[in-house]
Image (cartoon, rainbow, N blue to C red; front, top):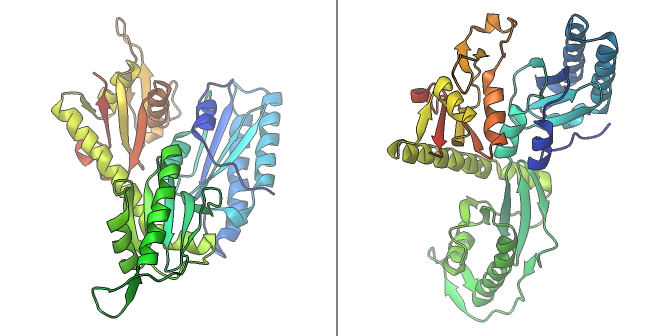
Amino acid sequence: MTQPTRPTPELLAELRKPRPYPAVSVTLPTHRHWPESQQDDIRLRNLLGEAEKRLAGDPEVTKAQAAAVAQHLAAAADELDPEYFGGGLVVYASPEEHRSFLVGGSVPERIVINTTYLTRNLVALEARERPYLVLVLSTGEVRLWRGHGDQVTEDHESDFPVVSSGAEREKAPSRDGGQWTTQDFRNMLMDADRKLTGVLRATPLPVVLVGLSKHLSIYREVTSHGQAIVVDLEVGGLTHTTPAELSAQLAPARQALADGDTARARHALDEARSGKRYAAGVQDVWQAAGEGRVALLVVEEGLRVTARPETVEGAQRATLTLLDEAEADTEGAEEDIVDSLVETVLSADGEVVFVPDESLADAQGLAAALRY
């Protein structure tokens, strides 16, 4: 058994390419902890079995195609280890291949058979799990970690850790009068800050600053990277922490990063509205996306819209007929048109940001900043 590959922008672009029918996408919410996680492997195989039944009953799928996809679905299940399940799983299969991915956030239980894979959940995952840096301060050293979602790895290739020489040159009482800081400590922080300059020049990422309150305060005084530091986390005793322990401590910081992304997306929408470059609701955004005008698409994570694209004579782009979920199996209907919308925007080099539900209640859960 292996851990599924984590999505990258390049891999997502490859997965969005059209494929011969049938391309099967399966998503399943899973559990992070035992004993609930014990049932996930059975639930996955049951869901894959349901996908095989749908393929067998699809008149557009030959027996050979159904058998090939079923074989790939079984191979994907065999390669997955329940020990590594997180919030959900995404499995893709076609007659030629299979792929599987871990998803940190929750996903719905779905089976989609189409000419493209359902990549929306992976796009949201990639957006939520954008890279960041973690600078851990302690009395004697400064360590640098690299984060990607809830996975963190210590960086030993950027001249870190930076260790204090221990030469006490100057003592100054702290604000509470009960502790002492040294000039050597400040020198160590300044040295770490200089080395951070090279790291940020190579990979300009947000920085999470971790340490005791007094350490954070002094670093803020000496750093030249104040704008890059997006979160201060007051936690001590992490000098010799494990990746799992540090990841758990960073949960509030990851939430703060996500909140910051949501705030920036809302601000971009407000500016677009002021500049009359704003569209809201699935109908208007669909039209703009079809014309390649969407620079930023903002979508509530749980939004699903069943619709049928229909070409109107004289129109340059198909319009949408909104449907009830019960009508998802009717001819030409898409179970969730938001999936196609996300792919259309990304294919035109637009940006997609997912925000918590109810964040866009005034826009029916979906809005866009337009290029013109």
